Image 1 (cartoon, one colour):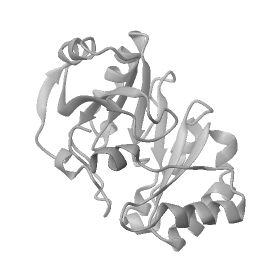
Image 2 (cartoon, helix red, strand yellow; image 1 turned 135 degrees about the vertical axis):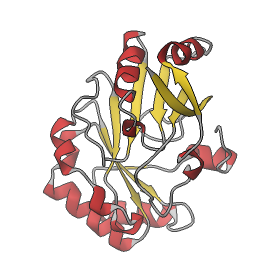
Image 3 (cartoon, rainbow, N blue to C red; image 1 turned 120 degrees about the vertical axis):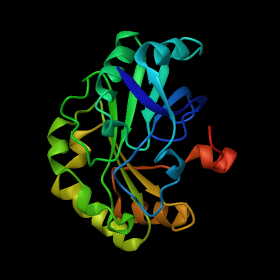
Image 4 (cartoon, one colour; image 1 turned 90 degrees about the horizontal axis):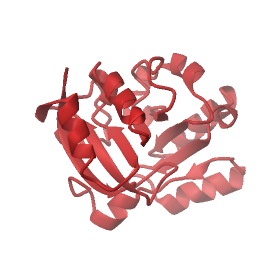
Length: 213
């Protein structure tokens, strides 16, 4: 069994519930989506094939209990599922960043899924797999990347219609860099008294989108 890996790197978690925590990132190659704001298009292709044992051996070199499996879209590679289970079996805190377009039913329940619902301005909202909502628990998180007021209003509609606050531990509203100011999004959230978390991407503030950060 082998997976195509774009990069493995150690950094601070830039978003979601463990923001700021030193984390080892395993970025898998490939993604079936083409969101207009994508900042990891270098992971669409290339990378190197690595066996599960090789990946686990690299993981052991780092002094962290936190692992984030990301992409691309990790679940586009079927071998991602046994990788997630193997990482959990090591006693690690494992999160999975997924687009919401792939089936999450078979993801190990010990994994914290951070699942997008793609907004209209992403140009990929038609790929949202709403069946996935049935497999989310209070161990998981839902993320909206918001580009404009229309995206925000759409996200609020999803929030209410699917009772997302009751389904997961955190609902994350993240402004798309260079498309929406974080302060403007914050003002909307406060005005509407939403029970969501404003998320700014720490890694972009610290390292300005540098690869491997």
